[in-house]
Amino acid sequence: MPYDAIVIGAGVNGLAAAVHLAAKGWKVIVVERGAIAGGAVKTGEITRPGFRHDLYAMNLSLFAGSPFFAAHKDRLLAHGLNFLTAEHCFATAFPDGSWLGVDRNLDATATRIGAFDPKDAERWRAMVAAFGQDAPHIFALLAAPMPSSAAARAVFNAWRSRGSAWVADTARLLVASPREWLDENFAGEKLKAMMAIWGSASTVTGSTMLGSAPPFHPPTGRKNSSPKTWMP
Ligand SMILES: Cc1cc2nc3c(=O)[nH]c(=O)nc-3n(C[C@H](O)[C@H](O)[C@H](O)COP(=O)(O)OP(=O)(O)OC[C@H]3O[C@@H](n4cnc5c(N)ncnc54)[C@H](O)[C@@H]3O)c2cc1C
Image 1 (cartoon, rainbow, N blue to C red):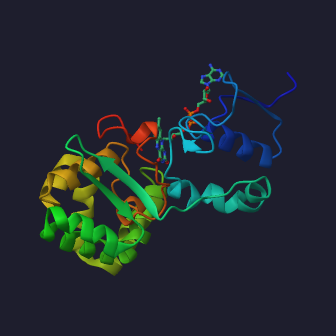
Image 2: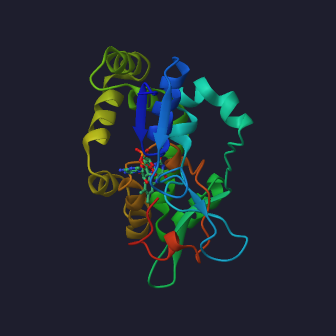
């Protein structure tokens, strides 16, 4: 057998595994049944000519903040990797013709949310304000294998810098369903629907809250056609 490892599937995980092994000197082959590598991280011109859409995954912040990216950043960038940051990050269109979306501009987003419910806009602002302090702890935990000493260390560091109440609240957030969390924090049904779609992809925390990374898909795009079918 001329290879040390055969990786089945050229999705992001298969490719990352292959790179890890190759970096350790293994001879690796990746086999892919699809015509194009990338798995669920692909771009395609599926609506109008010249408009390129993420076909599946669109919010690549976790990848951009991953140890894998840190380790292989230079080579990936040299091979053409490029992250686009959208001003108008994502939106949900509703059957009554209204819509709600998140911008990188906090005032723009809060104004939109406030038009449906002013208290929700205040709550949104408070969450965004707290996020800078919360993020390092949440992402340290998300990046740690479970269970592991790295996870225990992340919880300990969070407890030391943010206190017991924060740790208890965050633990509740991590085990809560998106519906529970949204009902507890917001009143507006449209805001909850918009956020629940992200919760279904388990990305209700993180950059999604801030609207920091995912590209905006115009309403003609497949993903934005309705709140039921659009899935980040
Ligand atoms: C609609 C959607 C939206 C998403 N949004 C986000 C997001 O915004 N942010 C985010 O971080 N993640 C998102 N994800 C998740 C992310 O896309 C996946 O976690 C990631 O693609 C998983 O990578 P993978 O390599 O494990 O599998 P996949 O990406 O599924 O790749 C598997 C590959 O293996 C190939 N394959 C399978 N079986 C065989 C076989 N027998 N022989 C040869 N080849 C085979 C497939 O053709 C495919 O190319 C989303 C996923 C979906 C579906």
